[in-house]
Image 1: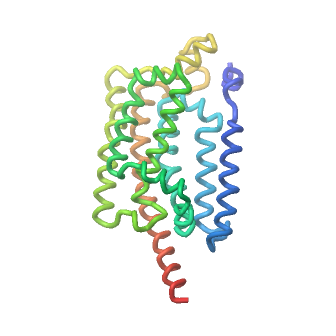
Image 2: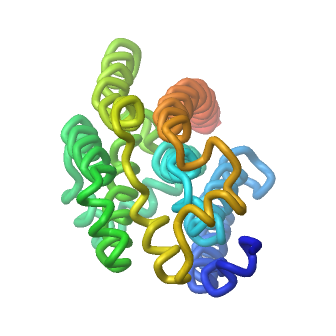
Image 3: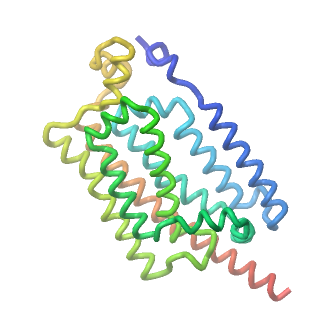
Length: 279
């Protein structure tokens, strides 16, 4: 049996999410055109649009279902969702646009609810680790609503977590020694979730409850799916080990790329502000 036949009712595109993200893209374009001097082909708008496309492909495409069949594919999805999309999207918001939006009373009130960056980082790390515990994964596999709410909560926290590194408000960014300490803390706090897969694989391994629920829904054995269209080493101890290292690698690469890209954008904004003030 082929994956397309087995999952034909589940491999669907999320048209509602696509419509919502399209509206955000249109609104962003109108605001950038009206309130900034940015053109749609400039770096920041391209970053913003790319982050929306990446977000849709991560949680609105058939990849969402496929990622549940393998720990390594799942960690690729999680890493893109929490370590790639947020910093790229934040880097795509011009400073001028951000300050104009911040003047809206409702937005200013919402901002006060955000936790300090280090507290957010700790909360995210704890919730992310809890998410991958077998008992919690089993609950999520049986209740899609709770699963969606938890994923959304982690996404909101991830934006706050990346805020001090790539905030549109340059005054709220960490610099030099403070940034290095924050990056180091980020690596340390997220390490347990990565190592959990490695250690569990080296012991007895853990079952994928999403995979089990899917096969139960299709009324076929779990093993037949893994043998038919998930080649080795998926759903083996090697799959779990690679899942941990994949997350570590993507997180590290994103931190390095974000530090460089955020600095370049900040320097360009400062240069532009100085030029504008002189004129």
